[in-house]
Image 1 (spheres, rainbow, N blue to C red):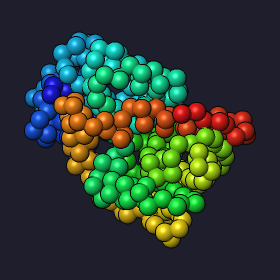
Image 2 (tube, rainbow, N blue to C red):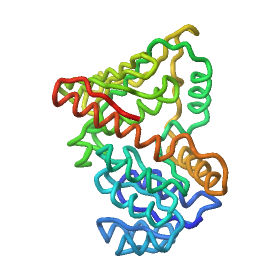
Image 3 (cartoon, helix red, strand yellow):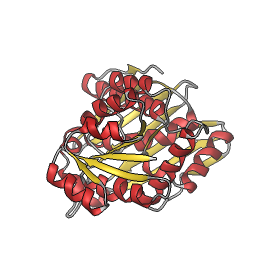
Amino acid sequence: MRFGLFGTGPWAREAHAPGLAAHGDVEFAGVWGRNADKAAALAEQYGAEAYADADALIADVDAVAIALPPGVQAPLALRAARAGKHLLLDKPVAFTAAEADEIAAAATAQASVVFFTRRFMPEMDAFVTAAAATGGWVEARVEQVGTIYDEGNPFGASPWRRESGGLWDVGPHALALVLPVLGPVTEVSAMVAPRDMTHLLVRHASGVVSRITLSVDVPPAAAREEAMFFGEAGIRRVPDVAWAPVTAYRNALDDLLAAARGGPRPDLDVRFGARITAILAGAAEAARTGRTIAVSG
């Protein structure tokens, strides 16, 4: 399958480009970026072609992989979906539920995957599948609290992360853990404290409430990453999983390729990504207004 990569930043270089190049069933055909020099350099590194026009790259490939800020990703993904291309998108899919829903509606006839990184590691997938099958949960707690502003971290220079913080950056990963286990969300409330400390209460359709704490700007000594489910089966901690983005990316590509060949629709497809976006947008509104916000879908 011929892929075009959109984006040239740290995540494109760390995960997308090497993941595409390493997969035996993928032809890494081209690169488009907002910085033409970076696109040319990345394309040359992997023997791909640099494109000056995004729509020309969409036209020349079977699938697009997008590693761009949500506000840039969303219109490109919509154009690719309307052109019938398979989609490998980054999280979050968009900054608004309307945009994400529009992409999902346009991508019903093709395969799609949203790259919630560790969810594509076998150990994490096995845990989530087993927890969903176990049932009987009465609570979930997720803490994804760290910093992207430590020395040498390339993501600290990302304008959209600086502006949108942990809610939109690491919030999708937290929600991608709890939704498959506890089910759809009906409402969300949120408060934001100094240092980007964002606290969510997320009510699921079952009545169970998840508590989620997020930040990308805490002192290093305050950083932690932990997720737990509580219920009839006791306390289950989500396992520590190695940070291996290229391995996770390969598994995401496997899911996309299998679906494109007529296999099952991936669990973490653009429809799932749109549901995550709706919750995040609701949380942002809740934090801004002090109200509990209803979430549909």
